[in-house]
Length: 223
Image: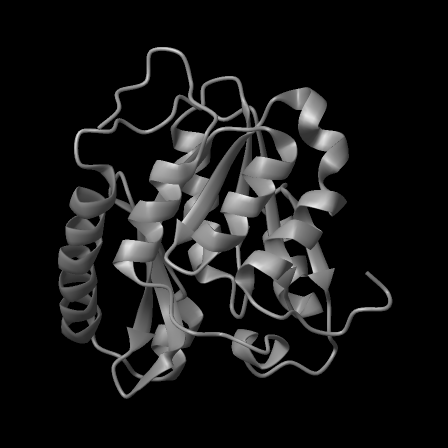
């Protein structure tokens, strides 16, 4: 990866990430794409590892007056991570935080219903779970995703992304997880700056890629 400094698009990043993770194939991991942008990346990783693909729905909680800045994140199974220091420093009230959480919970529930339908989540008990995203900024969504995977019984959790600043990797490693990032730029402003094409992933893209995933777990409900 030393000769590459950016990615053509998310699936390009996924193919490269799949090559990087190839030695994990023997562990028969479950690949979890963070919706929405992480799913195209995860699709290629799952294909490279001949692993089952599932979606993990998480939502960033944006600061009310600066929505790109995360005050925390929420995920499936009522998981929640808040940056108490940031909330206090910016003077964000309890009511404001509650309003953001309520709004994002509604959108999370909509996406879970849309992506899963009658498909049950893949069983993670005793398995290696690879959480995949197109990149990390603050790491809040990855943090809550790690909590979801562990709550569902994952024995080992790995966070694998295309790009992340070093300080975010260090924060996640404090959760006792392995973090693999193809690019670790010292100067970082946004994930999208490392892609030639960073077109938003749609709901249809997510559901289509999940349907196309060819590896199925025994006993899993299907559409």
